[in-house]
Image (cartoon, rainbow, N blue to C red; front, top):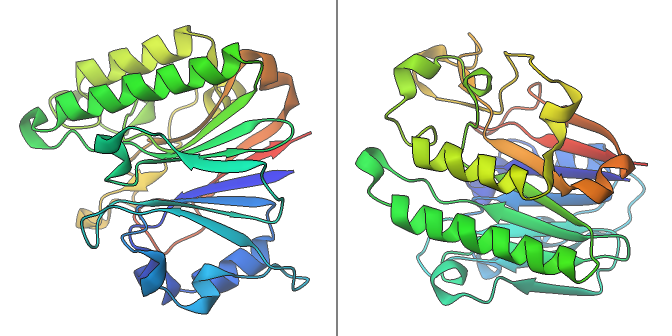
Length: 258
């Protein structure tokens, strides 16, 4: 089973760069999208119900922000979920920050974590969201569910998760409070699947600034993750970063389950 996750930085923009064909070519079981910047009513039929390489349709689920052209998450799936819902917390649901899909083997959380912004202008909001996500994951695990939390966390956890850590210690995404929350999250019984598979390896990134040819020079940040609860980790076969896929300032990430 293959689960892809991608911050597309605008679904209508990435449609013009071959997104529908990419979905078809990949033919993954589930595709999670962040930063849709759209409501379903603004989208083409091809974006609402793409098909895989064999012509099998995906069903789509949406959590859109009230603010136009902002934030938003979506899940495309060929596997019928038992239930799909939002977080149930108005301040986060109003920005379309999280979708939860319950499947037979696990609950999948597609998340677009807030950017803490320059000077930490939204740091309190971000940390409140982070804590709500952790509480949601804990509640699911305590109820006997396995979880996969995928998406754009907007956090580079350790120095090897960005190309220039010393230059970014006061920048959003690498603030001490954000990194401390990531440590708290992992210490609560969750696994960063890519780092578990590639311990100590620098140079693996999922986001590059559009400025100064950063992607070409691989001056990036690893801020997109597939994390799972520890009991589910043996089901993970591979955790992959897909930098060859362009169309956004992020690249997709892929989780392969046994």
